[in-house]
Image (cartoon, rainbow, N blue to C red; front, side, top):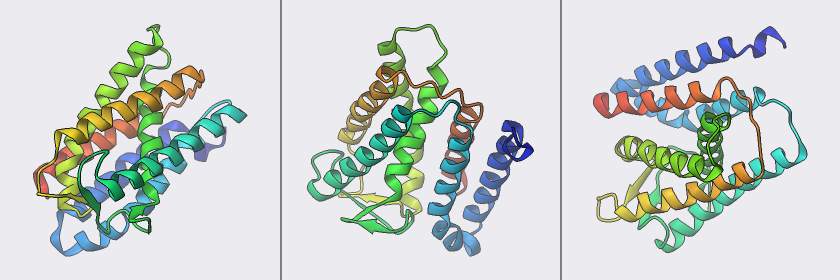
Length: 211
């Protein structure tokens, strides 16, 4: 493996640039700039993550692409109808939109699903136990992220309150996507996935305090 692709180096990169992101978003004078950089940060995170994927196969590409596309489409349906997550609209922070939905939201879905799947892939649990536990983790992540996402203009909720429907939808959609990963028997063997998920979770926890 090239020295540039060593997991230890990628993990350091994750830690450093998310710390820089915390500083940039925490300082009022630089916040607007760092909000505009969010789509690039998300894309960089996903790229570095997939560079450490082992044993690429056709079904891996198909499932990963399918989850990204379905994740985007379910968000489109959510925005246009209000029937999936509740009434909400996307702000400017996640970049270019199509049908009032940021294209990067599909990337966000597959990145989170991939990381959560990787946490459990080597455990000798029944697949449905991994899926249920992973979907529960996804909801906890969303609970942590929601207040920050609203304050940083990622999205906003009709009426101002986060509906319970949002968390139910996150759980059900995560069940489906994690089920697809498990039933497809995708082995990611990715040494940086857990670190990325942990760093991002810490990132939003700290932002809840400083923003």
